[in-house]
Amino acid sequence: MKCKTITLLVVLLLSMVTVGTTGDGEDTQKIQGIWLNEDGRAKIEIFDCSGNICGRIVWLKEPNYPPGDKSGMGGKPRVDLENPDPELRRLPLLGLVIMKGFDRAGGDAWSHGTIYDPVSGDTYRAKITLESPHRLLIRGYVMIPLFGKTTVWTR
Image (cartoon, rainbow, N blue to C red; front, top):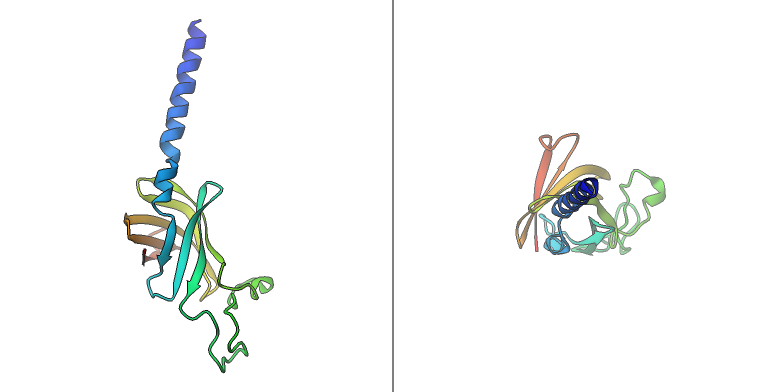
């Protein structure tokens, strides 16, 4: 009987720890929505993807290449030309998932994700902090956050 009681207490404690560390849906919903990037050239929709946070481009200030574009793409929708994978260079930027794998880090922070920069074709590790309901800090970095850059997105 004593063994069953201890087992039950352990199970209850573990379930409380799990609930406390994963955060609830309401906390995750605070970050979800449409965000304007710092330079105002794109809007990114942040959404739940299998329990993590992801983001995709849903609006571009200049969705098409300008007439007379050097690459011969004048008037066509922008594509992921800088992608290091040649197979992916024809994917449209609209709808492109550029943020993946972010999980709750406690409070209003998410970490362990990556962010892709379609301008350079580079992917960075990143962390996100919801500074206020209308202000999001994205810190992209290589190796450790100390070697990175923070950009501010607004709702």
